[in-house]
Length: 147
Image (cartoon, rainbow, N blue to C red; front, side, top):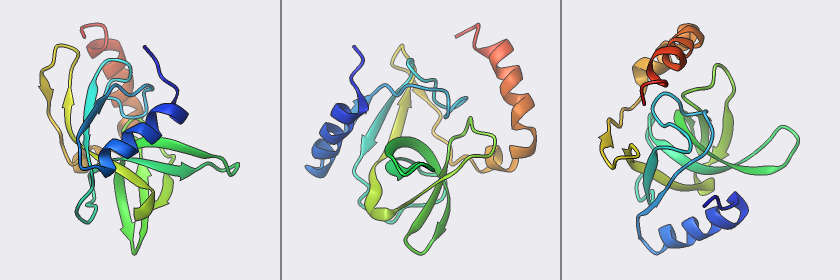
């Protein structure tokens, strides 16, 4: 069952604020190849420490047109209180938020069979930005038909 973000995310935030972990299945392809939207599940925990580069964060961000939305993206840069996020499947786009906009941090990723997937910091993948387009194309052609 698909639940709209405007209903789901505030409930996730409430549970996380109570110190609980939550599991949900994100949609979209922006975190491909590490998180497959509508297939993989992520386990979120409250961010009870300083955010670190490489963390995958659920955060509220403002779009270019000024609308608030939610993203589950990797933290690529920290400047003071300003956090810059980027989806692993994105070629260039980033979002900016503050520490207070972070709802939770991914602690585990599981495939549809419940097996844990490797949770990396994404450093090498970030360095590979110039060739991501081709790597993602290969992934879509070879790996996706298998899973």
